Structure formats: C-alpha cells, structure tokens
Length: 448
Image (tube, rainbow, N blue to C red; front, top):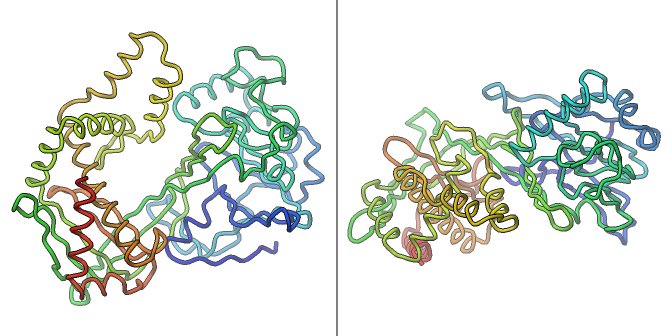
C-alpha cells in the first residue's frame, strides 16, 4: 500500500503524528481532497480497516466488521525495539490517507461492542460492561473514519460515537447513558446536516506523553558541569547542572480529545501498549531542589491567604487524579474535571455541593503538602522552560522537560528534544550570566 511521506524528528514527531489527529489536510479551496491520520489501539478496543470504503459504508456495522481486516496489517514497517514489552519503537509510523483516490475505511471499536456485533456476547451483558467502563473514564466506544465521515461527520454529543458516516446511531439500543432502549433515535446523536462541521472542527486532539531520562553509563564520556545555585531567603533552593549526554525515552500515554463545538465531554483514550521514540545523546540541564528549603517555600505559600486557598484547591484536584509522582495508584486524569463539571453544571442539593467540596479541599495533610510541593516545582519548571523558549525562539518541539522524584526530593530535567541535541543548552552553559538572568526572571515570575 502506498503511503504519503511526512518527516519529523525528535519530540516534534510525537506531537505531529499523534494518533487520531489530522497530520495533513488540504483546504476547502483545494477541494478537501486529502486527509492523513495515524491510528493506534486505545486500551480495550479493536482496530479494523477496509481498503475500499465506498463498498463497505452501506453495510450495517455487524456486516462491515466481518469484511474488515485487523488494523495491524497496515504496520508493515520494521520494529526497532520494544521497551518493557509495552512501548513499541518503529522506524516509521504508517499513516492512512483518506481521499477520493485513497478510499480507506478505519474502524476503532470497544472490545465489548466488537464481541456483541460478532455474536459472542449478549445485549444486556454488553450494556452493563459499557456502563461500568463509562463510569470509570470518559472515552469513546466507536469511531468510523472514512473520507466521507472526516469531512461530514455524524457523532454523539456525549462523545461515545466519536465519528461516523451513519445517519443513525448504531449503538443506540446498547447505550448506557440513555434512559430508554429499543429505538435508534437518540437526542444525543447529531448529524452533519445540522452542524456543518468537519472532524477537525469538532475536536482538538492532543498527545499526552510519558518521558523518561537515563544517563549513559560511560562516566569518562560524560560532562557534568555545575552551573548555578539559586537561593530562597539566603539559602540554596535549587542547583542547575549541565549534563551531556543523556538519553530520553518518549511515548504516548494517551490522547485527549478537547471539544471545540457540540461535544459536551472531554474525552481521553489511554494506551496499554503504545508507540514511542528514543532521543539519543542529547544535552540537558538537571535542576535539583533542596527539599528542606522547598518545604519553607511551601509553608510561605500556604500561609498566604489567597495563594494558599488556590493551591489547596488545585492540590485537591491533583490528588483526585492520582497524579502525584511515586504514587502506585492508577491514574485517572479526567476525574478532577468530572468533579468540577458535577459541581458547576449539575450541583444538585446543598449537601451534595458540600460533599464534593469536602472531597476536593480536605485530602490527608501529608498528601496535600506533597501535592502543593509538586505544583510549586512544576510551576517553577514550566516558567523556566517558557523563558528558555522565548529567549531561544523555540517551542516544546525543541526543548522539553521531565520532573522526577527520588529519596532526595524533586529534580527537573530540561532537555534538547532531538538525538544529538542542538547546542542551545551548551551555549547557555558557557554563558552563565545570560542563564542566571533567564532563571532569576523565571523564578520571579513563578513567585508572582
């Protein structure tokens, strides 16, 4: 199968080729004759494809499934490496082109639905399984991609059907969010004839990346150069060291579908097996925080009435998602947003509001302090990187960062996001006056 070729390097490749994101699309003035996307399997789904969409689109979903082949057949490219059995490193990511001349059909369907439509499970059993899944996380359970559906999508307002060409909801009788079954008519299902929106107009698709840093073992080949120490109230808060080289492993943890119009829920597709890349022999700044001084910063911020109230609320939301570094609990990234939605959009009784606020604002004190400490570190790291981007004229495609934790506390690795690096951080390491100016400015902005 011939495929269009698009090249990106470094971390920019993962952002550019995010699964379910349009890599390339022509404009209306170009008659919208080509749309290119990359696909991967979200957790608990099955991926299928068919080479001639015009033949298969008229079929009911149960019949279309029988005619399709497994999506992995499109991945006829060399596998470079597999990390921990779950992160796949390929030499290239095969994209699918949808156009009048490249007539493809791709189906991504929840495994429960797949087993229902292939006759392996009954209706009530599947409805109950879908209900449990949707209660746990906000995700789609059916997506049908074709040239027609990308440009003229029908979809579910609640995000369960991400995109389809079908005029009626195929899963209406199974939908756990409907109060009545037995009819294919559903008030949540919207047709393109009403919205006149393309797939790109419905969702902003954003990658959620996992990042890991390792230092090559040959000490004689490494440069570790202490650069600066920044104080807080006369005591050292953080130390910046230039480290060269380091290796970075970057991979997709999930994909977020942020609604632009019509869709009412933020959606997330997570991956149990995923795609990744390695960045070899790049350069980094290691920013190490002194934990005792960081504790003093936490105390001062929490004692500030306005800042403390905001940080406690933010830390409460953060803990709801189990996002604290080192936590063994399973992450639930969208849970805080569900709670906020429940609080602001469906508040209910006063007692219910009090209960929700209590869950958010009153976590265990030790956990609260850990979360506040992480938020402060993340804020400082983010502002430092923003200042680097501004000074160097770069973006997250060229300079990224990772926050790590160990027995000594938090560290931030600011790295050049390409194998071999670019030389930007080495330049700043050799011009410490400019680096000091950038970092003190970032520290002042973070404090504000």
